[in-house]
Image (cartoon, rainbow, N blue to C red; front, side):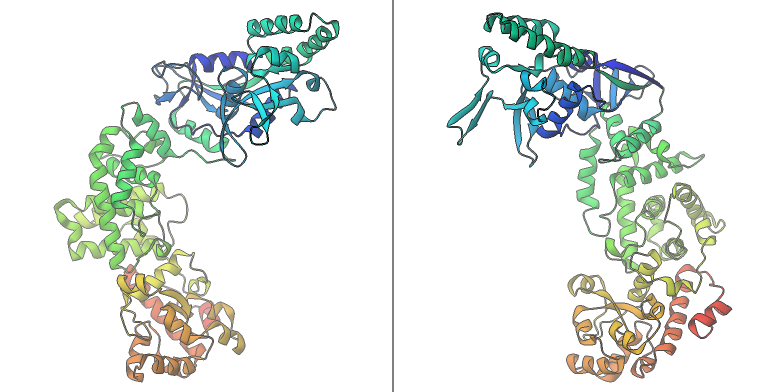
Length: 592
């Protein structure tokens, strides 16, 4: 990596010729008219505008598809010498405003597309007291500033003579010394070589034009051997104020060198496989990570899906595994729905879908994934990850362990996967699950639904159809207002132990009443017998006797025991510490 200052005019020539271009993943040029004028003012005042970063482009470099900057006449087939990694907006703005002869395609601060030429008011540029808005003038492509809906011309710059008359210097010739000299000579002649005019322009040249010609921008140059992951990291660092570059965009640019439209391919797959709510959180980068994981596993040897591995993914492997992986995601989606996880908002970990889909894809061979025993083993692994809360941070190493260990466990009777043995759930965690943002909280709600939980009024099982149509949501069993009124401990009444999926209609009847009162209201509302209602309540792992007796403390203990038992069942693991001193003090009893 090298850092050196380069003259603005030199950089503009490189952009014009195509010697410096953009990697194809760079986003479009978006600066508005006001920001362009502010940038021009910084340059004419010799203020720093920040460094640019270039990547040398050669035989050893990453072969991204490239494109000239907007406005450059460079041929699309021209090979660049450098790629612009950071500084696109500033360099493109300066090129179009100070170098190109064409009007600048920009927009207003409200986003309306406009075309502009930029001028300097010579007198104002030399007046230290002048407002910035008076120094740099933005003029429509017609070169006329009008008012009264175009009926009155306020400023006419359609000819050189008008520029001379109004003493307005066109900024798009400021870096062309020959053209600037011609303009200057004609300007003097127009004013009959007036000594005051010549003196003023001499000052203007000395204080404005020449400093712009000498203006330098710091340029950081990365050599062509810079690895792809480093380029990606550069973008994460330099784009903190905007939209960060993703691994997907880098791979898109790499595949584009072989004329493969990765973005269009992903959009097609997304519409076909990922448009449903449950898989809607799967990103393009997630898909590439899962595909990298799958292809590495298929290749044998060390399995890895870190950023550098995704960036090294070949187009051949993408084409080879993309279709089957889409099917793997669909199978994972089906298994999640079997476990009563119906929506993306109720998905404990979207990240766990990466190894989940890859594992399902591998187990598609011989239709093994469709057998009950194999499905149950995959589900056991899944729930250990959820209730062990193991996918909340960087997980690439765990993904690799998962696909290797889970498939070996299932296919060859190997040892338990690390995600299963890493499972640990402290019974005290039940009181800590206060928010639906927690993976384990979402997991508990899914287990309640999986227990064939029924609506309190209709008695209808909360399957996918009812979940979607009846506005099922999570509500308190002992209502919040009632618990506050009774002075119960918040960490108990607001925990997952006192919550369950309830339809909107049932929740309206519950209100803030004591359970003994609202159960009567539910019986009247739904014309349901006490016996049937008791059954509906029990389907949520709620002891109906304790509920009808308003026995809050005993209810909390009883339901906590049932929830722990349910977690043990789906994970196939024993939860320890149910009779610890801490548990007995918090719950008032052991939870064995």
